[in-house]
Length: 168
Image (cartoon, rainbow, N blue to C red; front, side, top):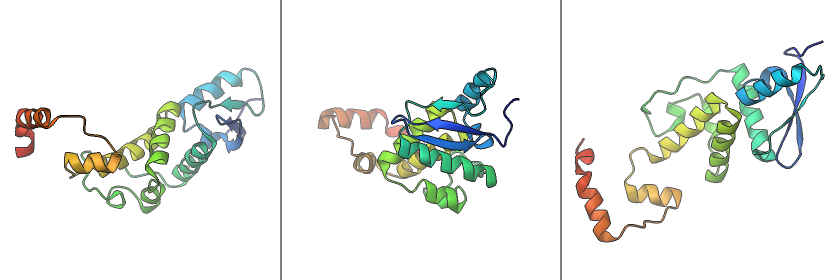
């Protein structure tokens, strides 16, 4: 007896916390899909899928995204972004979903990349792009708490070499 879309799989976080998730939701992750397909040969009713790179609180958010995405598919994200406001780019639920602390946003990017969930990766990366859009290098450094390690002379040289891109 194989797994069907009504089956449940157990996703196990870095800390060992287990989340029971419908197979159809778990399959949004290409990594999990591959692991499930490999496990299916073992005829296990509810395979445990270890995700050692994903913390429990992040995995909870990833599952929330995948469940919602199954009910309401996210609009395609136009590139380049048409707005720095994510609610102009995607539906309200998705814009609210990524309205989180920077640390969590970057952990979601890492989880989406590791688990190979393209819509989540697109959404989280577009959110970072929206945080950069229309800002000066100084404003970007401040937003992401990046230290400027150029000397004034080096910075002037880089600005001179790249003056053409600011004119566009």
